[in-house]
Amino acid sequence: MNRKKQYKKFIALLKDQPVSLALMIVLGLMLWAGDYSLSNQVYLLIFELPWQANLMAAFIGAFFAATPKLTAYQFAKGNYWLGVIGLIIMTFFIFILFIGQKEVIVQSSHDLLSGLLGDANPINEVQESKVHYIATGLLSVLCLFSLFISFQYFSAKRGSLPLDKLLLKRFVLRKLQSEIQLVDGNLQRLEDKPRNFAESKVHQNIQELEDSLHLQQQELNRHDVLKEIDERFYENLRSRVILAIYTTYIINNNSKS
Image (cartoon, rainbow, N blue to C red; front, side, top):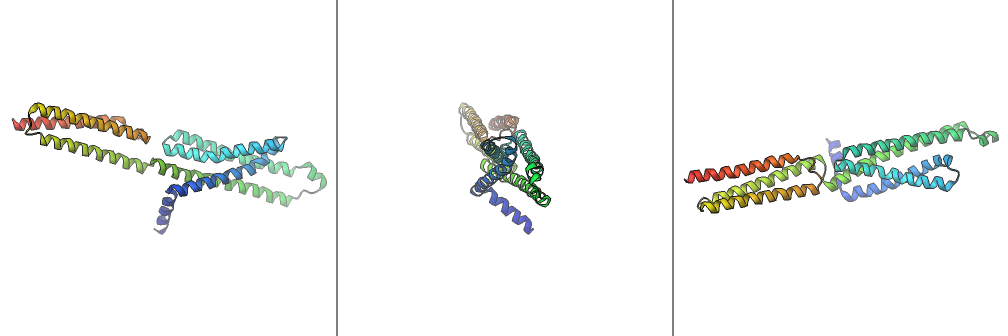
């Protein structure tokens, strides 16, 4: 129970936008610095000039640091296919980083100059290989943690978590229910009015209800969650509301006559 409470407190802290934003920035800088330092050694084996290797390492490091944030944003927005593509790109970067570090270790262990001078030390080479792999593994863990933090931030910012979507659906239903109750109350107050006036008032109420539905659809479009709520839901609900209004009107007229 205590662990669950601590976990809930931790998630609530992460959903605090200033905290998650600060963690995103710190993790982004750590990912860039880590990828730059590890990738730079790989690119020094490819490029002849050091500045070319530094420039390429800085560019790839920036892209590597931004990938978890872009992936989390797509997941929070509901674009799951783009999120999966982002995960594949992240995995590819980490895989290339492991392969590159292995190549750096192999090249350093087969350095002809150190072999001729007799400076090669197998123990140091083993320790260096462990350091490279441990650093790459820690960078991979930081990348996943950055993905988690970024998802919490964008989800809290956009209100696109499944629970938030459920609450939004309930809010829309309560809003529509209040609209129906308002129309029903207006019909009850029209019992003593002339028929023509009552008919015009009913049509006016129907038009107001349709306008309200249209405004709510626009509001949902602004929150990018209309994909989760089928449009047929609104069409069926509007038809039922209109049918209920006319049925109430006919029943009132029949009871009056």
